[in-house]
Image 1 (cartoon, rainbow, N blue to C red):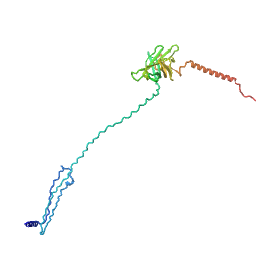
Image 2: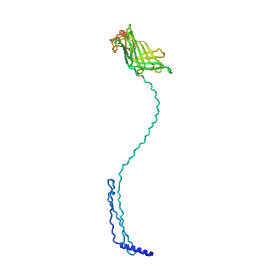
Image 3: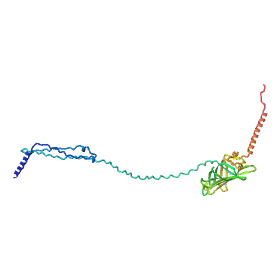
Length: 348
């Protein structure tokens, strides 16, 4: 029974192969239209997408198997669908640069520089020479006193609470000192000159008083008294004012004549207190007192000091001595000529 079934199946298969055998016809190509991508949607399309879609045809070969009777060949055609995938380039987005964050700069800490040692106090330099000033006093439209000089003061004074008993100070009387009062009446005329200790409105004032006296008999006037009052602020470690004065008679000059002395003239000043002395040095000095006419700032004819006040008898005596010496020499010469023997030629 089983064999019968096998034979029947085999007969069916063979008959089918005979009836189906015939010429092989290649299958027609099948074109599948593929829609192109929209240019608006995809602006960037690769060259592969712009080409036409390719149609691939693959024939299917039929193999005939025959045992004893030729079997018809059966051709089976398979058309795989061809799908073209467009290559779409996404729009290029510029890279976003992340914001640069600068880390905070730490504060620079400068180490403190070492403090230099204090410089030593420089020793005071030499005092510059004093400047010449001019002062006058006028009353009733008459300038009775006219003075000009440059003055420097050298003072020795006691020091309080110090191992050194004495102090020394050299100061110039400024040319900007002012006259505060004076007097033109009587046989004594005077003028008072002041200047500040500091260059401030409320500064204490130093002063110098000069008194001139007139001798009605000899018609000579002279400096009779000079008084200096100096504030303690001027002197380091001084506790009180310094009063120094000069008393005497100097610069004797005939009336209507000025006294002039360019070389330095020194006046030694003293004080009532102990250890207070001073020396006033005057240079470029010219003074005139007891003037009787006009308020001119011009001096009368000067009388030079010549290194000091020289009496009139001195030049007279010197002149007489020189004249006598010349006379003695002349007489001796004449006497010598008379006593000398006559000299000549002797005949042979």
